[in-house]
Amino acid sequence: MTLLDGKKTSADIKEEIALEVSELKRREQKTPHLAAVIVGNDGASLTYVNAKVKACERVGFESTLIRLPENTTEDDLLNEINILNIDKDVDGFIVQLPLPKHIDEQKILMAVDPDKDVDGFHPTNVGKMALNLPTFISATPSGILELLDRYNVETSGKNVVVLGRSHIVGSPMSILLSQKRKVGNATVTLCHSRTKNLAEITKTADIIVAALGIPEFLKADMVKDNVTVIDVGITRVADSNKKSGFRLVGDVDFEGVSKKAAFITPVPGGVGPMTIAMLLKNTLLACSRKF
Image (cartoon, rainbow, N blue to C red; front, side):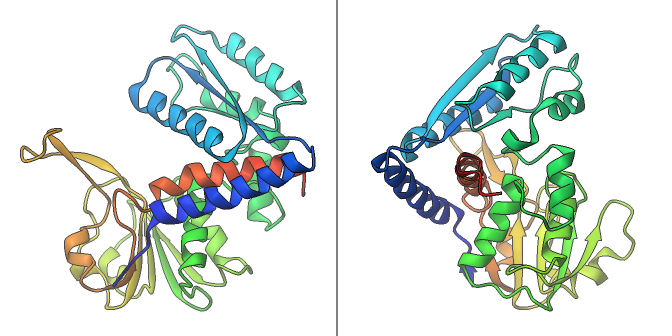
């Protein structure tokens, strides 16, 4: 069994990006600039945004963090987005989700300039992704493709089962892995809460992408030998033996499934660390305007 080490892979990607940025600076070309907007004081969101800022510093990017109070109006947030849209120095920006309930998330995401949408959430970029046109691919699906590629996991002609149909992970993964691309050409089955005889389907899979958000849902008796398992889920589960009082688990029963798997991502340290690395990669792409 081989662990698909997202922590190491993301560090490798950041090092590669840092070298590219160093070369841009040597040639006195534009330094990539990523901005992030956060509304309110959600602890997890603040931690994640601060990690993005630190990652920018590590690779030599310029970064801007815009913190707005919880009571920021939708119009005020739209105004901030418009300012970033027209700021020629900002190559890409993200609006950290979730937003306060009084703000329409879809309206906000629609307001982001698609050419600066390094999260890859704008319908224009989602449509280009679906048509296999050059665009920003959202960070989690992109990170999964990168892990499969760097560990030489064969996808062509394989049976893939994707568990979960969210717009952020499940749906795009089902599209990307079925496309004619280096990490693709697979036969994909997308499963969800209404799928019947789920275990019968997962047992046929050469590769499983678990993105349901249900702790330790995928058990050993639901997979075949030598399966590749990508665990996207991450949930805090109470554990009195831990100093923190909890442990982090994924959507996969790692202890059982890992005994049958050829490749598997750990939680934490698998897909999670890849997201920031791929966000940086999208920002570099935005700066270079290669598409």
